[in-house]
Length: 239
Length: 288
Image 1 (cartoon, each protein chain N blue to C red):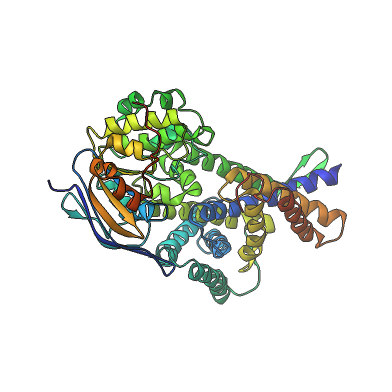
Image 2: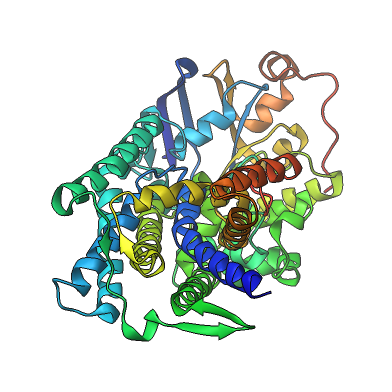
């Protein structure tokens, strides 16, 4: 199966510090591909490098076209929707303005966004800075769904959210992945187990493992070695 | 009472002038993190272009003002495209470059037209005075106040109602995230520079009315107070800049009259220090 996104020898140096030493990563053309690793392994830097938000070298190929040298706005226009780790909502803008800012297509998919997140419709005049963390996450994911993207990159979308909201976000990701492939950076392994088909694991800025997500998480020794977990897995996401 | 009214009108007129310079400066710094030390020079370019057009150019005052504004806008766009844009990744060099332009342009104006102040032609309709609450107030104060109010209204409409306004407001918060939504923020940079240059150049043309003359150092002198206004108002906030401009203009005028000439400038610095002690992020809560 030809990957939708193929990353080879991705390297990032910031202020003389080597953050990524050569990351290799394939994102499957369907479903969710999880990017895993311990804290500081380089997951967020990897997705930021893919998006062109940090200076990088190496190859990033999207659907056969090299995008590794493009500036961020052109990477996005090639069809990658990005929901960053800190959600990246504009606190001083309303929910409607946050969404409007992301419009690229002539007919943005508001019906889809409002079907998945009816709360955003109800709160469209509210300042995004006054939303809860979960609602801000809805804005961040909603923005990626407005346009006909070929890939959605979500960086720790459940970070800091209440368990009930984590379940809601997991539901949405699973539904989104039915139509658009997702590259998911995530620490919540229960969520990964539920939604991800494939995974890549980073360690010290390098790719340490690639393969099926279920197989990795079922292998207690490998999970402990690569992710630092084992006997006490994270709580299950409510189905 | 007459004196208070006159001082208030003069202070508001001066505040209007500060606002015309500071509004663009604030947006440029808020959106682009560019400390544009050449902004005062844009005011001087607008002032001299309007002065030339009204005199030698034979356009008359009413055409000279838009002409000066247009020339200042062009100079701002040129500055952004040629000098600022190649240096976005080198902020220190960027500052040095704007300082250089801020020094070179007035020197160029001085080289062409000399260092002496040149009388600015006052149209008959604006040369007189009006009586207000017993005070005799020059008409040109009201022209400046009216122009500043129009610019404030236009900027607020631009920021609230247009897509580029939305991009600017978002960019002031998080420029990188704007690009991560697929937006080429550089176009917004050029537009903001053009808007800032236009407002400053309009300020330059109208400063000729206020001071009765133009001189090469006028823009640089006003720039210092415009920076004070930007810090007080909160970077990127047009409304904050408007409020701070009024405060600075009034404090300066009243302090100069009721204490000693020159203490007005000191009072503004004290006002800035007190405000930053109480509200470190300026009037609108944005980090200065």
